[in-house]
Length: 161
Image 1 (cartoon, rainbow, N blue to C red):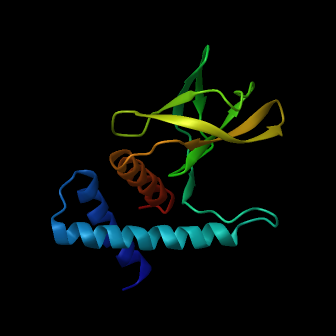
Image 2 (cartoon, rainbow, N blue to C red):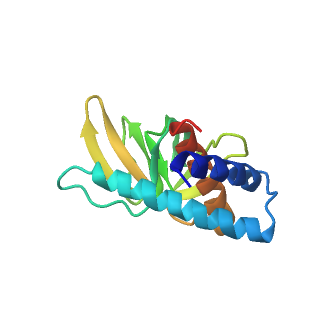
């Protein structure tokens, strides 16, 4: 099967998964195909890696999503540069302290927001702001599934599907 047909078939299964309409055999097939797509995208991201950059462990997609970040006396409305199952990255003018307890409310398309505790894992200065990376502290099974379906939606959109 060529890539175009594979993606078209996958898109049908993905739509069913999003609507929670997969039977047990279809769900197994969908999850295997989803793993294949993620592996292929990770290889593609690895090929684009700059010297000195670490290898990605989870699929990251560039997508502007609204995030409300709350912590000690802080409430920021931000927009992501990218998101993955591991976390997300946003521009900020004032970085949180490393020990600050933070909660991120992420507005995913087509559903209720995900509310998750996050931790700062990286900061990099850039013109006029800082690029701050956050990791998800406790990503339960249901939240991970919802986030992965949203990430696959974004991948398929970028692939023109």
